[in-house]
Length: 454
Image (cartoon, rainbow, N blue to C red; front, top):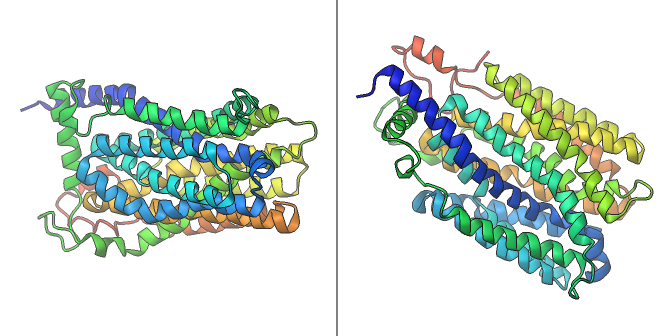
């Protein structure tokens, strides 16, 4: 039996090892993920010139990814629970790498649509699996930090994506391949290599981790189990029998889906259309567009860092989430009416807002939902919210083809972020653990309808 001081020391040591060993693995996986998601944004003009894929077709194909993602998200997450994170995350990475590699050989709109759909199906379940993995490995007090660091990796990847894309596109006609073929082929092959390597470094369960001592395993397992026990079933029994589907119908989950949908609208409108906006700046080339397109994502990394520090001190995440969404709205609105150069500046401001909103958002369901419903709930929130990734590029494609401009789309994004900021105040948050301890004798709150942090 561990003493309290020893358990605290072992837990702190376990978390330091997790952040040094496991989180970097997750970040590398996320970088590969974002590179393969966003590369078509840089290949858009080349696909139109070589394959005949116009703006509307490009937008539809970019969005098809998220239709497949929504369809296969929950089944994929169920399979992850069955086979474990180690095997399933490896499968996800290798399969999406293969499909992305095949994009180098696209020859028609139909083939483009099919491969984008298959890419979404292959990748489905990746993000919920990682978030669920954190919930099983990281205590609630540090889960926000882990999630924020992980999601910040997407901004790092987006910042790297531009320069990498510019360099690969410049390999035009090397070995008889077009630049966009180098782009898809290289990034797809990289994911396959990383996915294969992950299998040998990622552990599915705490008890499987040879890099933790017996005391560290015990302290970490006990802490996660204690946090789980604070949740009760809807009828107050402690028997662990929970009606998942009934819990998933809770209005709070639907509200979370709506807010996340708005966040994803902004993220993927910028992911797929930012390069085309930057190209409006006179004198730009593929290489300069790649580097300039990284500016908003670099700014987002710094914003997310400070947001993560603030959220660790905040009792409620809602005010911070509202502030991030309003910054996104203001930046996007300003970009819509500014010159191309200033538009890039204001889009950097917007990126600081909507990218910071993502980790702030995910701390709410992680701290609110019952452990037994966490994985399917996250899958549903992520899959339905990710439909914003279909609406944004497809809508922008239609708007650009009809009007020759994406400005109306930017106005719509600003409105969506504003509405999401309003909806945040209808979310409920569980009281901090200290409050729970002080009132241990009182009846526990219902998992999906906890007392709101006022």
